[in-house]
Image (cartoon, rainbow, N blue to C red; front, side):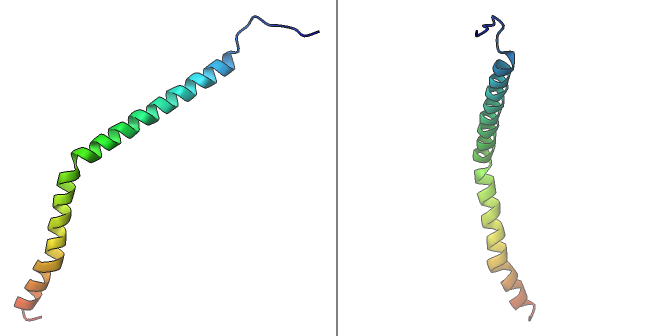
Length: 68
């Protein structure tokens, strides 16, 4: 004979709730990271172009002027 229980499956419910909570936090973290990257993209590109300009043009020019 099969015994039926009127007690809810707490472990299963808790596991699903924790999984949903974890996934929602991952989605929120991803959104905040993307927003941070978008907000700093212009500054980052400016720094990158400036460093590339210094490395490609200014340093060789200084070496040439100093007689190197």
